[in-house]
Length: 259
Image (cartoon, rainbow, N blue to C red):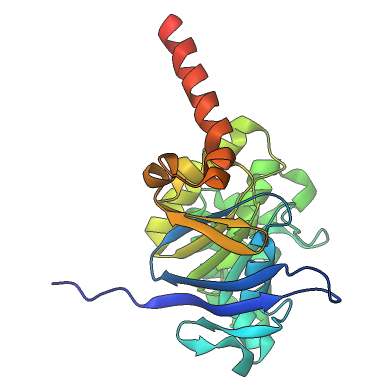
């Protein structure tokens, strides 16, 4: 019998507000186990991106504890914590004066890896995100949006991180590219044995790709379930949130049936 999966990312009693304003996060408890693919959804300002930033200490909570791999993040040097977490976000943020290979190698170089090991890792990462190895010599401005997003994922994983945090990584891409990269991400998650937490405003992506969806509203978790269970939720806030993508799916199915 396989051993039970261990917690990879845990939030306990997280509270955060800015300058005495209404809480951005208000008593959040959430545990994500090894190997899970979880989507965080909710209206703008619900606290989704804030949860990701707390995990790698880009911001600090007012109260509560966060653990990554069973370790309290507040007890870890921030640079050590961040080097163990892959982080990719909308707009990618590739270093414009570095080649693709240099972008992917940025964290391994900081960690003191030698040249041959770095070169082998760059090649491995390009293979993993399904880009030709010759792309290593290209500059970021020579890439399409989809190619740049793949390089961003490769860079996030280059140092061997098993926890991948994604903040709207494909939000600026056209629909066709976003669908293609969404499929690639699911395959990458499985192939690399990752734990993936994805913030997205695209409810289609969340419902179709993530086995577990966490819904936030005004700094609180109001639902944490499978897409199927969310579709039958009795909570009016959850129903309102997912009504549009479900209605669009029905309309598309009707169009396909009429064709």
